[in-house]
Length: 121
Image 1: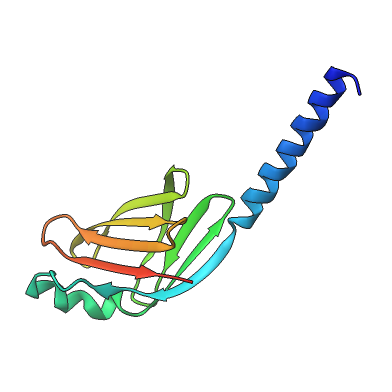
Image 2 (image 1 turned 135 degrees about the vertical axis):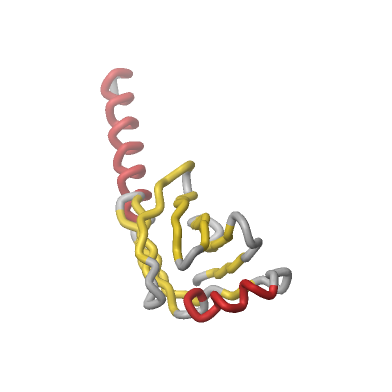
């Protein structure tokens, strides 16, 4: 096989594998957040909103987090396998971080020091 044709075949195979890998990242996960033991006492008041079932949907690299407690937000990709969003919710300044490779979600508050985490299967 001529060298130029060989390179085209290798590039096409690489491109197809990348498309397949991207498609494999599309998923929906349901999970429950849990407050960390180090949370301040005032964080417990927010547990009912955060300990309900949450749904993380990832499609084509875009992540969306929803919950019956009122969270509905898109998380932006910040690096491969990590999506984040800063948002206000129930008087909290939240940072949401979804680590897709580790299958974890962390929700933290900037001012009070509240943390909730979850891992999905």
